[in-house]
Image 1 (tube, rainbow over the protein chains, first blue to last red):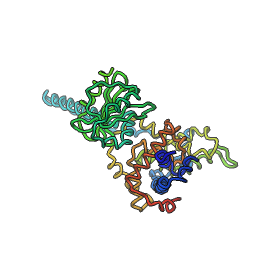
Image 2 (cartoon, rainbow over the protein chains, first blue to last red; image 1 turned 90 degrees about the vertical axis):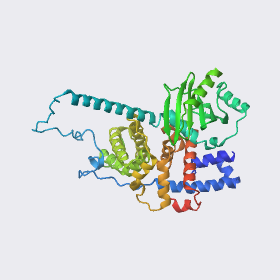
Image 3 (cartoon, chains in turn red, green; image 1 turned 60 degrees about the vertical axis):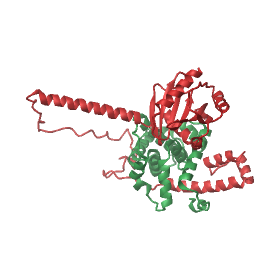
Amino acid sequence: MNCEMARELIGADPDHGTAELLEHLRTCAGCQAYREEMLALNARIRRALDLKLEPRTRGTGQSPAGGPHGVIDPATAPSAPSAPEQRSNVTPLRRKPAPGGGLLRSRWIALAASLAGALFVGLTLWLGRPGDTLAREVVVHVEGEPDSWNGTRPVEPEEVAAVLRKSGVKLGPGMDPVVYASSCLFRGHYVPHFVVMTKAGPVTVMILANERVSATRQFHSDGFSGLLVPVKSGSVAVLSRTPMQLDQPAREVVQALQAGG
Amino acid sequence: MIESGCGDPADELARLLESFRPDLLRFAFWLARDRSVAEDLVQETMLRAWRARAELRDAAAARPWLFTIVRREHARLYERKRLPMVDLDDIVARQEPELASGEDDPQILDLRRAILCLPDEYREPLVLQVLGGFSTAEIATELGLSVSAVLTRLFRARNRLRDLYGQVPTGAAAEDAP
């Protein structure tokens, strides 16, 4: 077992270890120190998670659930109170129809404006939602490789080719210079994970040959902005850490994929 | 349903469920990051557990069983409605009273805030492991992931906290151990 594997195991579960890990720790002072630190951190995490939350009282004089020891027996529990009925002997006022068409027209305009506003808000929320599981997993994956953003020098074409070969993806020309290239295990498949240096800054590209999306989807999560774009064989994820237009880099990747066949 | 030596089994179960309420509330809070949602999740969990009480044969299995129900209820909540995107600073600010509960060590309070800000993918396995006592294999089953994926997420979760929180003096382990 090497130090990298040992530290991943320690970081994942400092309180336990395999025989192989323990054997490694006997001979590696660095990993032993790392384990000590992780044990200390874990003890603090345990303490931090141990919130002392007192159940709130709900003002009914009963336990919160209303049943024996707070647990409702559905067979015996009273049915949930229905919404208070509208009992009133007061006739609701109705507005008189407007004498002229002007007020009516302005109401229609107001209604149309409200609908347009609601549509805009809905569209904005839809576009700005955290994204589906795939988008979230892409972000988590990218977050796990912070060093990928540090590259500035173009990666050798052979290295890019090797990454593509491993994933069975063919890419034609037309993409911006690749400054990071890695073949990453993502959802059980090796996928090309590139960082391309565009004029606007570095952009991460993941070619997800095994993940299909029905339509182009924009997402924002954990400070990342991104696009998931459907392609003939799967999808492409394009992400940046800074707000920028991703349509162009996404288009270039899609064109390069098409050119690669 | 669990059998007890004496007393009404339904009463026994009710008492058992109630004894786990603080643990469940804590767990639900770390999942949902919202006290009110957590309370609702626990309430729903109690109800579902009561309805499914025939499934529980062994009182010793009650805790992981209840944790699983909380987690599924939480997942169901996400299925039912797409929750709006939230600002982490807002979450922390809104939950400050909960985060401060029973603790006055500023470093632990910072750590609580940092845990609250972890992405779900990292926070959930960490809480299942540390608070729920689930093994890596159990977490993998619970989350529908491979064991190696769980190990990676747990490793990254701790490393993030380590980065945010800074290096922890190793003597703190003994000092903080329960």
